[in-house]
Length: 258
Image (cartoon, rainbow, N blue to C red; front, side, top):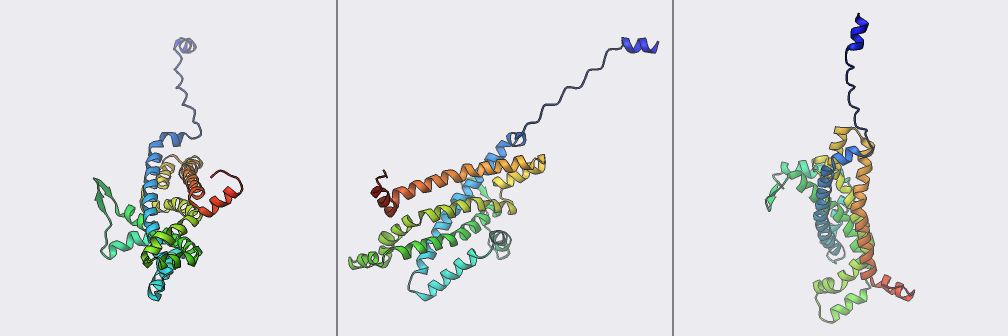
């Protein structure tokens, strides 16, 4: 009797099969977070690039001036920031500046800039500026002294000589090392995630903690950083070919089109 009832009862419906998981699903499902992180990384890199070039140019000029006091100050700045870890500098700026009453939080065009973003970008800019100063200083020393002497003989002041004659030639000659420095700066910006800056690395860590798909997330991070650094390398290569007179002359002598 029980066997007949069992045969007459309808079979229970099988649970629907779960959707197959595919490689990269964690990245695709959280793609808006990665895009947001890329945007913040790019903004940080652009602002830090402006800070670093300005600081590096000033420090490089001070290091080649005849004034001993200014040269010592500029040298101490460059050696301190070049020879201490960026992570320590970022944390020191983030926690140290509020201790002395300096708050970098502000609103810009309706956008709230947090202390972590401002202090981290400033630290990254100063750190990179120390390396930029070394590159520009090498370029300034590579400009023949006769260029400056000729400009001075024409009645230009020291500042005019630097601005119109020496610095343009130096920057053209140091384009390749500057490109390497700024490419490294873009990758070093990942350290800012340690103080809560929601950049690409911060978003990747957040997605990894939610999905535990570490290999997928880190593979995506590599691709996203390549999307940022490869165009920069191509731009630097184009600028070098176009504005470096020594390289352009060499290519012309070889019959290449510049």
